[in-house]
Length: 385
Image (tube, rainbow, N blue to C red; front, side):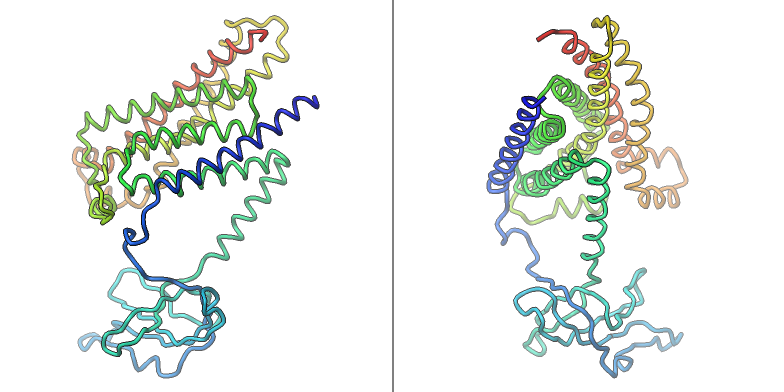
């Protein structure tokens, strides 16, 4: 037992060190120069300390209906970040009621973000309201989430948090910059997907037969999902210009051309990764328990048991994956259904086609991961060495 714990500790140490090296050098290789990132505006956190008198005089009313069209709220705020932290500034919040959504007028005590914009008429910088500062609330939510993970999972919970951090850093510091820099999206998706799978499973379970079985089943299901997604993107003649976000990405001035179809494919694969990993790990873990408690174990018996376990996983995880994709794009689906009553036209929209391919290819990956994991686990656990 002591030797096993020692080996697990060494595995954790190696995974963390190698992950740090992967993220550090990956980011160094993939990151863009700041000049290529577009906006040069800098935002600061601030707290509103006073609403200045005379703000109402800045209001504009319609001459026909008398309705309020726009107004400027002048206020004083104390900066909470940046080099000038603690400094009081005079800022303005411009509210245009012609837009569908407007911010509520700021009040004393509100935590907001502000930015300074150069005014050519006065040859000076003016501070303007940039939105509400939600950072503290989000940090509290994340900390509660981490606390619950540790309370339930104990040591395993700590490793779960580390794996989450590694995954997030790999995506945001390596994968996303590699796309913006114009690197081959297919290759970077495969590399980051494989890295995430290896790092997560090894970190949580160590290097043993169970982890090896989960890795094989996970990567196998992911390969199938990627192949199906690539084939369907070609068959359905997906262009990538499905909505304004993709158009904006196409027009992004980074000095390179971004392959939108590859971006869609990458999103499909990365989106399916977590669900496939969950199924593969569940089956591999169950197969290990069977191996430890089965008196007369054989490949056939263990494979049959693994498939029976996998059938339940298929039903729940495919529903989970499809519902997750629908939930993430619910507003888009509602608008499309509301404004397009013709089902033939609706189901031939590229946006809908992409969502369907994404959900189905991921589900197929889950389905294929079940027999792959069960078969490999049955093979591994029926071998003495």
